[in-house]
Image 1 (cartoon, one colour):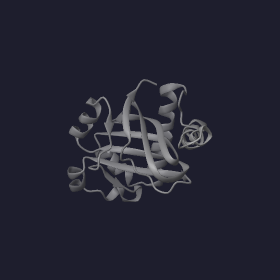
Image 2 (cartoon, helix red, strand yellow):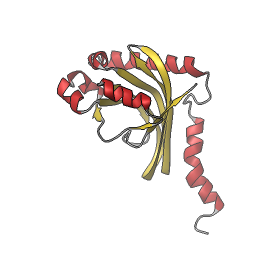
Image 3 (cartoon, helix red, strand yellow):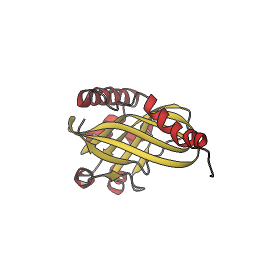
Image 4 (cartoon, helix red, strand yellow):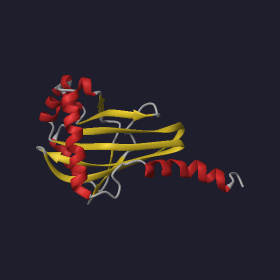
Length: 184
């Protein structure tokens, strides 16, 4: 056998255990908890990066993912829950999950927001049974959000901001993350 049972448990079970140990809202008290986290995340982003208010005012909808927990030991995963808001009102709840492999060791938590800059992009997201971030999403830093012009949002109908990172894995990519509508 290539791996002993203990090694298999260590390699494959550690990332799952780390995710389970983090407070990511799994099995929490549903929509109220998600909405409270989204409110806090939105306030943090707008207070810390005032330019993001302008971006939000031009978006047709925003998917707020207030707490994503990611862990990996060669094989990794990430999970979190959030809310889609249109005109500041929660219309749906979503979970996101991502699996990865490669040279990675550690764990981190972060928040992200997807700004749907066209009505078509928002409708495509809401109609799908599951939606994955594609390479055509425009990644911006919160500092740059206020300077994103109309040209950028027409070419890149989804703007992704990742912020509030803490932990021991360097870098965050949303590529390969799948979003699924949930009932909390």
